[in-house]
Image (cartoon, rainbow, N blue to C red; front, side, top):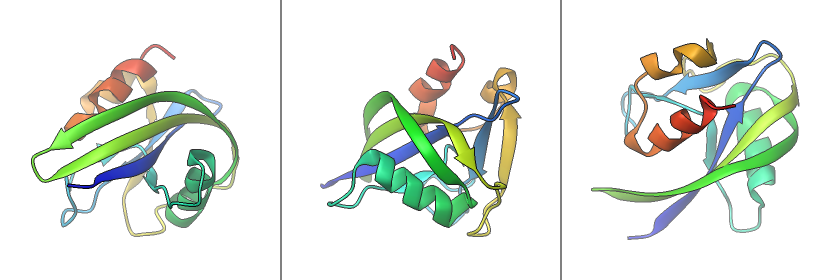
Length: 129
């Protein structure tokens, strides 16, 4: 089984809120909340992949990213390598360009949201930010 390399953006605004997106029901782990991002193409860095994916998915232009952590997680049907970066420098007004629900969430409320299992360590890490 091939491991899917995914760039994940923990996007923080000036009010110390983080941007979450809800996975469409028909997708893997559908109906759960996640941090926006997407697959890293073979010719891209994580930062380049995040810049491209976040523009396509949530209409944000990323200026800079900082590595937060890397997680390797095996689901029964899929293996993922999550390359997680924090993003504090961006422009644009966040919107769900692919029809997904998005929401700015207070860091203190983060554990009230249902995330895919692979995201549990990210949730723990950002509580410390």
